[in-house]
Length: 282
Image: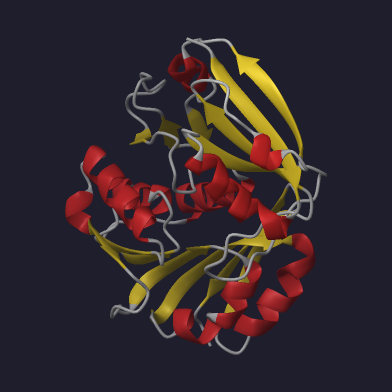
């Protein structure tokens, strides 16, 4: 069968309402896309920001009646049927991080069976290693840390990729923390798929946390700055804090927020993003 795709261009104030109207007339899915190359780097906590010029893209099984959108700018496209799953799968391949770690989709044979192979499929929760911020954290875990017997908090776990990697690198226990219940479900599912669920606990930020040897926080600069007193209080003496999700121009502000608690060990840059590694040696 063919699909009918409707694309409406609007502003951020009307996008959500238009989305609801499209669902009400039979859309099977609705998504949003930047219509004017206007990236959103730093959303506020617990928000889903949209762009000043937003495309609302709806998919229908048949051509809908769009009379209620007569005053809107829109276009209709016919999408010929194809094996969408196969196209999606072909875009995601095993990826290596450092010397030992591979992220592999479940439908692909690991290139190196003796490596530390993480089985992870693209999904709703952020984090398959394709973004520079996640890649930096994976490489840091692989290169710099003997995790045998270590306790770790993965704050902002997303898909659980960092928590699972830490577990497969020998960590004793990992607490995966996220304020999105969907992310916690994804982490738990992925941990079970990778047979490390027995050493990973999933929880919301408001639940109690222990002191640990290593803290991972791959989120964004402003939340990291706000969370500095909270994250550092869960670190043992001589522990390590790895911060990522930080734009290069924000690194000084993030370091300033943590300098009363920890010493900066290294800063690694990639694609305008930085990872900051700190040590609790004060």
